[in-house]
Image 1: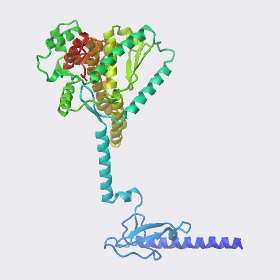
Image 2 (image 1 turned 60 degrees about the vertical axis):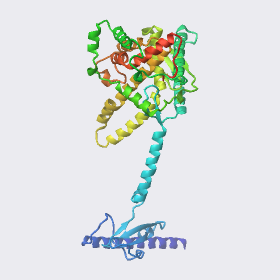
Image 3 (image 1 turned 30 degrees about the vertical axis):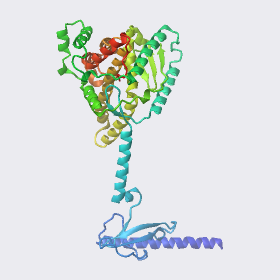
Image 4 (image 1 turned 120 degrees about the horizontal axis):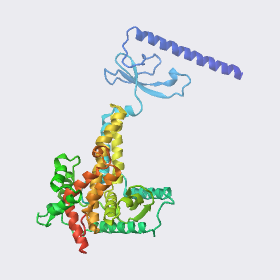
Length: 444
């Protein structure tokens, strides 16, 4: 008996399927006979469709609900909304996000909420760089930045295991003492009990012999005569421009805002000297300084080493690492949009030339300026700095295209900017006060 019942159920299902197919073919013949169709794949209302609801408008005819079981005997009976237009053609209502976004009210809500969230995140993460007063947007929190630096520091110690000089090694002691002077100068520069007067807004007579100091620095960079040197480094031929520093500082003074320094509070500063012939040094977020012995072989005086360490510490002061991460996120979004219209190779090349590299060179100039103040406040002659960067450029291999195709400006260009910029006069004043035993506070 169960066999006959099963066979009968299968036969009934087959008959229903055949009947449905016949109705579909009849509807198709009606459409081919000249009935207009406004939606692709739509069929004419079948006689067994549920009765239409009251008319809403002459255009849309009627609305109703159709059960899937009428078209498929094996379905679970799910229902889907549809409407019939004035040509008696059935249209299914769209489902999913597209249907939701067709409502103008929903779109307005999304725009308002999204704009509010964007404005809150943007202005909540705006910070001001010390000294230059430049405002930048960073997404990573200070705790995250510190953890990233500590993680990278542990990885470096693991990768250079066996090559790290012991703490009692003479080079380790020397580098650690120089770094200590720089850190103390940084902490002194962040204290604001005594306000530092800005040279750009003081009277021209505030610093006696300032022009002489810049001239002496230029003369120290070359054995040529001063006229030929200044002619070679004329302002009209500059590939890089540092005027944005003065403009940013003026805007910062007009705003009256204070620089962001909370990420420098409570840092556990550490110094590591690695026995590798690499001409490099860097400062990780969280106060982790790494110096390679290859750098010490080319720069032997304390003032030269202090200049490089001060530059690297300035990167941590300005939070350049996390700013780079944030900028790379925006660059990636811009690239994804341009990929839809331009070849990926062209987009990658253009974004590197016009976005990533200029931004990196700008950060290097900013670190040069902040580092120069730290070096001078620590009691090291700031007039050595231009000579150091010019020498560094020769060691690493300067070229005429470096100002365009490198993450760092050429050593010659960096030396020129530091020698002629007003920051050199500020640094000389800090240096004179430091060697006289009167450290100036709050200069950052």
